Figure 1 (cartoon, rainbow, N blue to C red):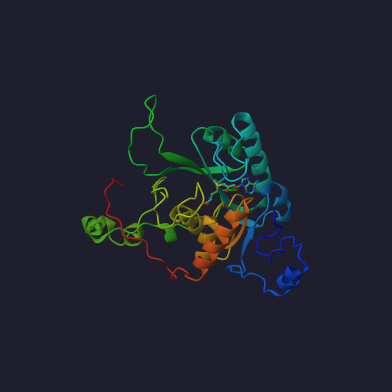
Figure 2 (figure 1 turned 30 degrees about the vertical axis):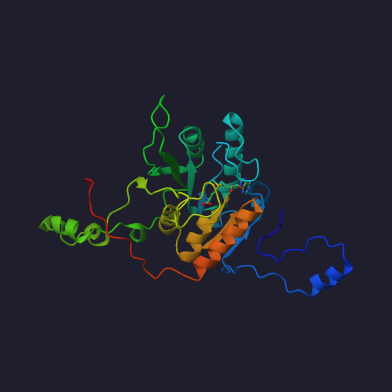
Amino acid sequence: MRDEFDEPQPASEIQNPAAEVAAAAAPAPLLPQVPAGIRLLNRDFLTDVANIPDASIDLIVCDPPYGLGKDYGNDSDMRTGEDFLVWTRSWLELAIPKLKPTGSLYIFCTWQYSPEIFSFLKTKLTMINEIIWDRRVPSMGGTVRRFTSVHDNIGFFAVSKDYFFDLDPVRIPYDAITKKARSRKLFEGSKWLELGYNPKDVWSVSRLHRQHAERVAHPTQKPLEIVERMVLASCPKGGRVLDPFMGSGTTAVACARQQREFVGYEINESYCAIARERVSAAASHPVPRRAKAKPQRQTEVQ
Ligand SMILES: C[S@@+](CC[C@H](N)C(=O)[O-])C[C@H]1O[C@@H](n2cnc3c(N)ncnc32)[C@H](O)[C@@H]1O
């Protein structure tokens, strides 16, 4: 495993002296460039987290192995039951002290383990929301012995009641028709009508199926839209985000686009390479100063 992914790589072992000379003369392969504030580490979070100073992080976005047996090119998702919960508690204990007093933590998990994980986190932090990510899975047969599960559970926790939270960049604008329908005097000048409404705690965002434009070679890549909302709402501009299990680097991409600093860990070297490519591409196409969210037709009752 590499020490730090953004360092030049050592040449592999060479037996042939002529090849050795040629290899020494050859320029080091150019790695895609990432912005200075973004650190993509090909390391194990649990053994390396001690290098992060306590109380230095504004936001932790945790998308750990879920304990469902996914193949990440390692056995990190093979723990189940109490073994999985012991492991989850152990890395959370290491991560939480890294948060500033105004900091927040989001954790992705499933209904199978969310009750135990949330109960544990409530002993350490203040619970702000449970967000349901409706993955918009199409209806197709499936299990006949229970209802089909189509959501992930996301816990949103904060260190204190003074946690940072900026609603304006994540408001959802109303379209013209809905605005007109709310044109009664009572609503005139309301910020929520002009700037948009507060996203609710059910986030309906399609999972990244194989043909999706955003999709890269990672089995559980999260949609950028979800992670970017967390970053915008819960980390001040220029603040620092930690992702202990960065996978293909979705949180890093959100940070590169939204001018936040980032430190992330991933034990699979090829996922680190994907993260680097994604961040490099995102950094060369930054988001305009106030990215406009798409106006939404209001179809649900507010
Ligand atoms: C659910 S995936 C993260 C997916 C990511 N959010 C994305 O959008 O691509 C979890 C990742 O954690 C990595 N991982 C597992 N154990 C780890 C550890 N101890 N330190 C760092 N990374 C680890 C796995 O290799 C896997 O890629």
